[in-house]
Image 1 (cartoon, protein in one colour):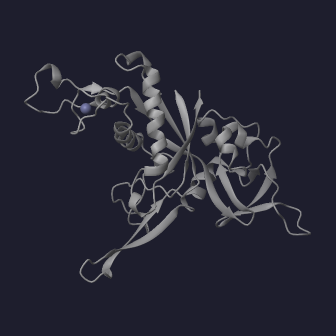
Image 2 (cartoon, rainbow, N blue to C red):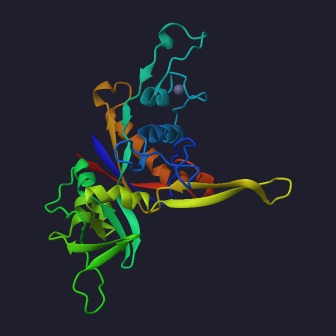
Image 3 (cartoon, protein in one colour):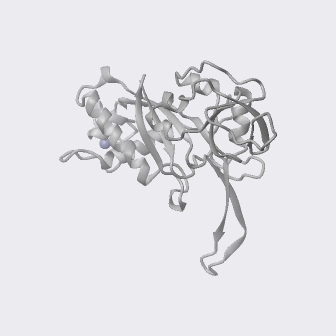
Length: 292
Ligand SMILES: [Zn+2]
């Protein structure tokens, strides 16, 4: 299993399919248990299948229908037999792909504070990725790896995360970013929130934008067509688990599959993924593969 860390370069909108929540018309996909926004493995699999088709080595061609059953993309990403009567019996069999994409989760989430941007995370999210902390924050406190500005005469360090104003304590070991990988170390300032509060902090600091449909006849805004949509903000650190089924690789070696995957992941930094990619959304930079 490999974990890929990724940084959103733009807001990322993976729509939940028109499900409305409070003031937001177009919501994003959330984990059912935690309520945290996530990137479904199926969304990443779809976009990587498409980019892999553009990334094939010279001489290799991909099917134009997307499901031919003969090309490298069908062999690596799988295909469904469908009910095309023109194929013979052998070709009617389906084939499961060699890559397994799991849901991408938020590892560290950027929040604006009076001390500048801070990347908030929590013990359970870190533990799920194999990053154990020596200390855990109290029920209503943050553990930070940097010095928080405090006004003269004030004893306790506090940090504001939107509507929350929490006391903070400095981590004994301040190399949390480095622990997460070289790429995450760039983010520098981390705050570890208690598990119960993490979802609240994320969900109350998502990007919410408003758009309006333009009437092509008048060129002006169409009345009644104002809509709002939410997104995971830019500079969010995500973690994706992707596995190559090496024991099933025959025609294409596991290394060749991994190389095609790496080239295709890189395209997400320019072509993006998810919704609203024509409106400045969706670019995601895959930073590094952290082996497990
Ligand atoms: Zn094909």
